[in-house]
Image 1 (cartoon, helix red, strand yellow):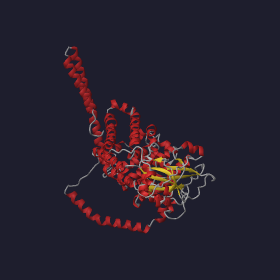
Image 2: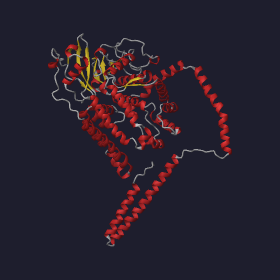
Image 3: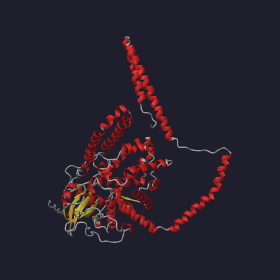
Image 4: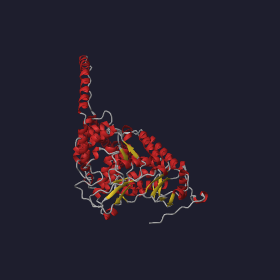
Length: 608
């Protein structure tokens, strides 16, 4: 381990080094490069994966080259992100954590973004400390390492030692980061405005609202004082769970651009080779990661929204008996402790999981956090109960209350699709889920796939992000983990709490009130119904979407048949003209035959 470099300062004009190469920032050039890249990706998706995939003659080639094309895109994106930094690093880190849906060869291209971010010059770091804390590092720290130990998208970390002997990590914002984020957001906003009116996108998501939510959280992440407060909240929420550790923030040395926290050490959560050598159980690690996020989602309502591998570490505890939790790192208190947590395997191995070497799961970087209102948490609990008990009705009701289903959608079709998904996936391990019969599922849910009656609520953007990243990490750590099995203890505890806290008198009064309102309105509605029937004004509405799709398929097949017959006739006619020496006329006939084939194969605007 290298020795820390001690900074001695008597004259600030000479002790604070200047960057040898001042960081360049060219807003216009950056805007054009970022926007052109994302626009190129959108055009690529439309031409290859939407337009050409509609033609049977090209579809096989599109599918055959898909992985290679996306690897090339991922490589170009990684090169751009490493060079430019900023928002691209965060996007790449998010995608590199999606082991559950991103192919391994594509994800491997993006994994380097967790470690390849180039640091800013040391001179900039020392200048920011001087500006923010009002004194050179030598007056604040006993020693300060000018060499960066970790560089992230928005800031970088240096190790230091306080005068009282405490080892700390000093996080300092990167140069021009405010302006860089502003330019990146404006570039992505420009691309969003180009594609937001594409009907399938417009129906299911308000891209501008989602981007506004993303920008709000990203700008909030630039405030290190808020990050320190979030760390303190997490530290309190996990005070009673010794298997989870949150570093302590040093508030008196924290400003908007400088954050000083307790220094921690550990193994990166995805360094599985090292963890295997240390004897850490992969299943226990994946279960602890999953369960501590279940606590954040369904109990605390306050969650760490950036769980990429660079923010999660494992500290192996020596001298402890396997299976026993580590000593409490935080003074235990009942603040933030929910009764549902009692007896749940949040930071200890479940009884049926073989224990390995004792370890502590450590979280860092609390700039990106999410909050869930109590109503949303209650609805999510109902959805979890539905998943754990294989209850499609509970899941459907939760989706509706979360506004994830478009108005006017066919509830029966959605329920049928949920039942189909549960039938194929319930109680399966993650490895088994990757081998599902996708064609069979699509065949049973094809009508729902045509309609796609789902939307993305703005307030659930970061919840979905965190859920997907945790699922990807758990998959990477232990592909055979059964997430349904991990849900059951939480579901049982929440159901028991619901039964204990249920105010049956209040619910009964509510049901009686609603029933009374229905009975009072019923005579008026019946009168209106009979009056309309007597006047012959009754109207009925039927869902003819399936019939319409069937008719469109028949029409499409008829068009193809007619086009094929016309092309055949023109081609044979051209052959006859050619044998008679009429070459010009024969070429015209063949060109017409080619046009007929193109007309027959050309995709229509309707869905079929």
